[in-house]
Length: 182
Image 1 (cartoon, rainbow, N blue to C red):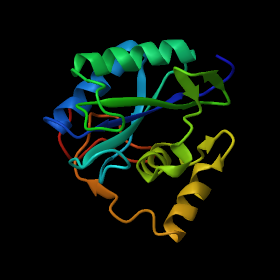
Image 2 (cartoon, helix red, strand yellow):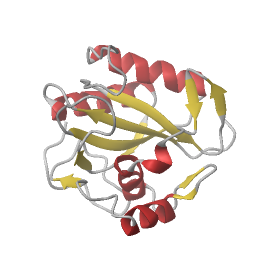
Image 3 (cartoon, rainbow, N blue to C red):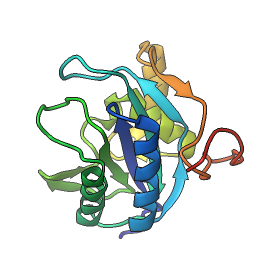
Image 4 (tube, helix red, strand yellow):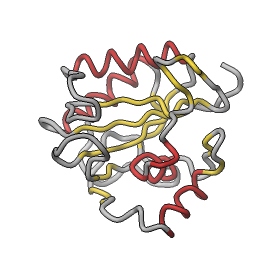
């Protein structure tokens, strides 16, 4: 890797036991990549796609790796959660998206880095800011500025922070207390 501090991965689930699926994903990503931080969990309405239940979303920071290694880890974790890909943007047990890895860029159609829609997604940017207040999304600037624009535009309506933790990896500046851990 070229000096990246960490990989940024977004997790989402809206089928089955969403908390259990996210906790299992964090454990598995830790085994595969090494998780260094977990954001708080947010509940959000789905974006695009068919009518479906709300999602639980979170961000994890992991050790930097190549685009291919990150994609392989993300797909392995989704497969363990019995993720199916039948409807684009449809409901899913687990979604693991690679958002960014420092300044790394990948134009591989299977793994675009940075994620092409991350700058538009409050459920990505808000939890990312929780774990990395100095975060920058290549091509789009500081994540804090993206969140400020989303706030001004009213795009954070419906984004609800949920009590509890995915495991004992607290956001920057917080202790590991409170909520259940995996």
